[in-house]
Image (cartoon, rainbow, N blue to C red; front, side, top):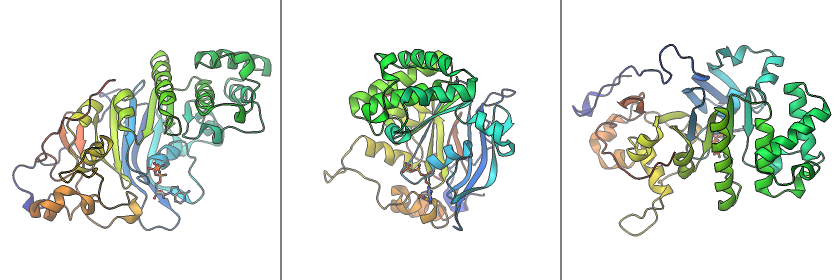
Length: 359
Ligand SMILES: Nc1ncnc2c1ncn2[C@@H]1O[C@H](COP(=O)(O)OP(=O)(O)OP(=O)(O)O)[C@@H](O)[C@H]1O
């Protein structure tokens, strides 16, 4: 797409972006032009999403509720709800086309090559089955172990993820565990087949803050020890800062900013990313009110034409010049190196150092 002439000379033109993975190095996960529709909706809820993850890399996917983060993860695993369908693009994992996989290969992918943990660990565990047996089942499927060998391995895994008295705990049912302990069980299950990629969808949202920190530390330890890649889906920018090397910001079914975590959090270029950071820091405006992003609806289904963020954008609202540009949707523009943002005003926008990056 061509930038409207009115944008002005401070704008750098869109350039061909280099792929994230080094030339010749195949990314572990490559999502290209992914498009997902719900029912007969006219607008895709994920619209042309590109995302790559290298081996051993932690990439955070952030954005408001409804922006399409979970459906992106479910698309990778071909586990979309019945009302949703992939209508375009491709997903490759370790060079294999996930869309062309037969059921056996898909089963080996889910819980085998890719481990998964979700927001509500207690809801994900079968209440009628002992937790040890649930993790052992994964080992029997993906590693072909006998029941005895699998249970022995579960004890070792439980110990590794910090579950005290693992021989006793494996005989517990889900309702006998705290939320944090249930998440440790889910992590043990996700790690049981030594996956190359862990998808962690809001892994700490349902936990209290002290337990959150323990679970984050555990995830960080395990991924370093195993050289495992992680796709971390979260609303929490503190979690992004603590764990991820690269961050992709999603708005209304599209990536609006992507780059090294330190760079994106310290010098965000898209007005949406800046607003998210201000909200997460509980900053106040000049009247003393806590800052929030005006308007609502980060879902692609609620969006009109042009830049999807325009109706809520403070830059478009205060500058006639910017407003005129934003009636056309920009492509991702290169800011510097691997940092890119989908905004016509990307290079006009001043940097805003805000968050300390601890990874
Ligand atoms: N099973 C479903 N049926 C109908 N619409 C759905 C379904 N799942 C997701 N959607 C819609 O798809 C869009 C993207 O949803 P998704 O769950 O991926 O968002 P998200 O960014 O993960 O949000 P959250 O952080 O709240 O989980 C939203 O508009 C949502 O309402």
